[in-house]
Amino acid sequence: MLTVGIAMLQGARHQHMQSILRAAENIDTEIEIRELRKASDVEGVDAFILPGGESTAMKIASRYENLYSKIWKEIRDNDTPVLGTCAGAILLSQNGLIETSIERNAFGRQKESFQAEIQISLEGADRFPGVFIRAPRFMQGSRHPIAWLEEEVVGVLEGNKMALTFHPELTEDYRFHVWLLDRAKRQK
Ligand code: GLN
Image (cartoon, helix red, strand yellow):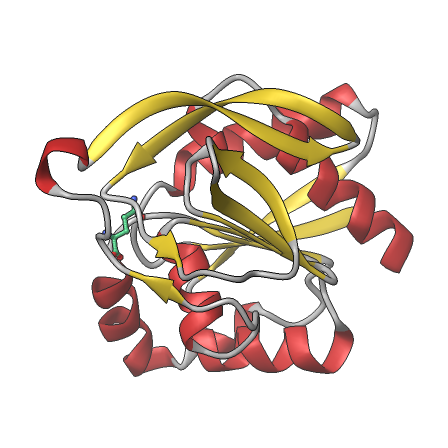
């Protein structure tokens, strides 16, 4: 049984919940979802999901209960696998959990939100439906790219930390969620 912790302070939490349940079904894995709201919820989590939303709102909401500082500590101490999407990727970068730096709201107004086919390199190269919502952009030069929108890197994998500027939880393609469960299994 794997315990998957989803940061519940703000953002697209319920879509991630659905996706991780589908992913678990697809690979016949039993999971328990833990809704993370305060630091004491974090103990014993095997994999983290940091949803998209508004990273500033998340930081403000977290101050009170210190949820994120506990999550960062857990990831640092135990190398717990984590999937951060959009605002979740911003938090991973801003807190130094991934080395790739990121710029918020970096697509111009016209292109604030859009869908486009992207390329991924997860288990072999393939296409993936990219959903971008007021997306951030990785700065140049990531050494660990895993997803591309044309020439631009839109996903990085650094060790057990996956940071994506798009939203796999808004699609019916569960490969990134399956990846998280596979990593967590290996780690356990
Ligand atoms: N624009 C948001 C931020 O800066 C991220 C958008 C998203 O998560 N969809 O936090």
